[in-house]
Image (cartoon, one colour):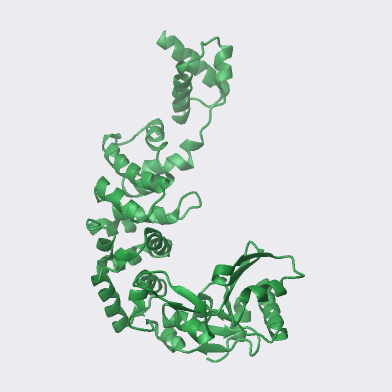
Length: 410
């Protein structure tokens, strides 16, 4: 397939296609060359949903963007050190335009040294052939540029690197190979697979910084099939390169019991918890540090292990107030995970019990001539738990409960 213009215009929303043609016309006017690249090109060919458009410009991308946006109401973010600019038109339309570049890796697993390059050099520096195609945006709009037979690999469902040192230069490509394999149901080409295993044998994952490993793992866990992704990493023995005691064993089976995608939790963290559910607390903390977890993310792992032990003391059919006190200090990810694999009643906490509020306050207690002090916290806590249990429904009943409670205390 040499021209993808009709396919692009069919699949893009009207605003996106208008913007694309506008960019092309401007590039023509400036006698410049502008190309769509990367994942967008791949997914247009596969007819896979993707509106994340990335461009490369032959020449000075920042200058091109500055001229293009002179009379337009658009937010522009410039990154001179990367010869890249981001155009933000709206919440749903933002694009990156970068100058074509080439890369040189000073040592294995290091970040590359970047310099200006040609379109061919820019495409051939990328991870896999299926991600190394470009589409002309201006002259001959829609023309496919493919220097490495990426189109054929894409149609055959094959993931292939460009050269023997690909995983030596950038070991994070191992994670990405698995991501594309699982997402599209592709196969990793045999030599590429051998190179992956050699990079692992040579312990190149250990050379990566925590932030780079975490970034790739997060992307994998946010995919549609996290269990399959983690199973592939386990088969490669990759987890042992993060921590020598990182053995997930039967934990993969936990993924069959969980499938919650909500806006009030970090999806990736939720899907990470099965991986450390069966490890020791000490090992889990070490893993979190190796992955560069934030303090809150580390706390989620610690609280998972503590909660797992506390669950043994929770009654078989706990009152709502027992569930409330058990869950209130736990992160949402931990609550939803434990409710899926151990105690389904815990799921009621965030959906129901955590939303219970008292109508009375300390002012009401003061009006009752109750002396201020720690007793206020105790009274309000007991009243709230009674309300969570459904024993109280109105403000009048709350006040009545307080009187009865104080009378009992006296």
